[in-house]
Image 1 (cartoon, rainbow, N blue to C red):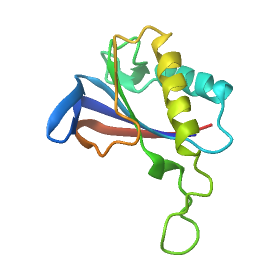
Image 2: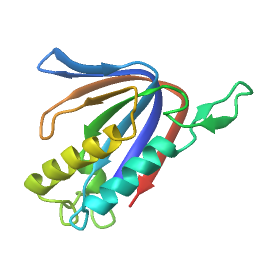
Image 3: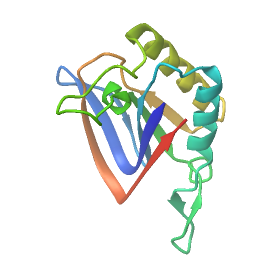
Image 4: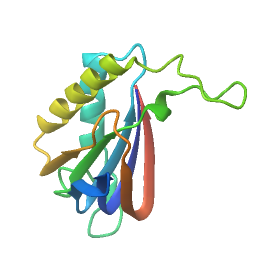
Length: 146
């Protein structure tokens, strides 16, 4: 599993020109699932995401987690994060989870994140063609891999 977390002032998703979800200050989390991902990895990733200190304290140091900053999360499935790019000029799906398993893992990850009591969790739609808007804060971006 690979997750790209961007600290944002706001972010939203449109599908067919209709806004389906949006957040204010928080994290836009793009996640790609790989063949060997499972419940344990989802639990570990959820804990890492909500515990990671990427928000500033009063001194401007990154000392607060999303929970401590009362931020929101927009979780978006993105298969291209799980693709292999080492060989040739085309991405390979060989390491990506199949669509059914990816959807299941996306739902599991969302449930695991929710267990931590994030102030707001919004979701992208698995398999949909989405338009994502965001205003980066910083920019601050982290890549997590489990």
